[in-house]
Length: 502
Image (cartoon, rainbow, N blue to C red):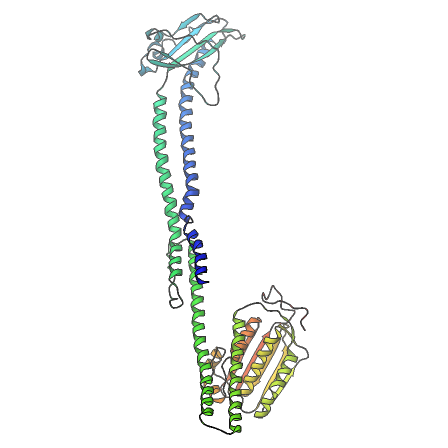
């Protein structure tokens, strides 16, 4: 079975190791989105530059066309004398004046006039007399080539005030070096895109490593913790974010609780071993003594009676340990209304013979049918232990048990004895397991589990346990338990009403 179990668990471990790391998954998910977003931004920037360059180029021609239209506006005949034909950019064809070439055509296509700088060109400008060039959403330049120079142009109609078409104006200009400019700008954007993508991916990887660093610390601590070494804790750096710090503190708190429970378990185991070893050793001694030589039947009976008493004490100790173990599991248990008055009277009758044997007065003063919400068997054990302790550690006087309902409707059981009493220090530690005070240890034998059982029972019922004692003056123990009406899921999560329970 062991080999089979190890073989079956091996694939799970290997598959867990093959899972992608958090950093890799983060890069695979965020990386493409970051790179794509930067690429889109770069394209938008390049498109904006493209639109700006082309818009500026077309606006220059449109301004010249509008100037020509303004000069002929309102005329009945095509009179071009008012147009500024003598400006430098109309007379010269050199780049330093940014030349603009203008041709005006009659409606029949006959050339009416052209700017002087056209004559200095290596050839005549083609007559592009199509009336209108439509401007789309994505602008483009209408170009032609003359010699080794490229031109772009714009053609618009000229109209009289009556709406009659007077002719066409064609404006041309040297194509600006926008392509090289756009290519250079695109290369710069590509380099910036690569640089920013690498930087952002590196930043994501660094952030993932920063987040994972405390998790690695927690993993290392978890792997190093053993039952023999529980002192290791996660170091939470001051720079840790809130979620990581919360996780680290929660893990350290978990280790604190584990260490506390392991220490309690070790102490409990040591105490239990000691408490069980002493009576078992005594039992073994009596058996060895009885077997050492032949004895008469009455001696054997006396030895068996002694063994019966000793074994009875061991059985009670083990039952108390089992009950405490059941309570420590903190599991929910069914609850029902319990008549605490009748329960106290029954348990008082059970311990009455022990009180009579010591000459003690045992009195029960209980209101009729004071009800508490609880598990009857556990409450019965707690009340029995309380009365047994009171009778056991009282030499003279008596024990008085009272059951009342408090002003807020809870059930209160009070046990007052005239026994040896306890100091304040003893009251603080009296409910620890296997604890027995010096005077109590000299007065009677016991396991030291009675008050521990009472405390755990009261805690699991959501009640309250109080001690009022002084050495030599007796002890007053008060148990307050919730009533059935006050036990609701909202106030007590462990409470589960059992309607059919009596």
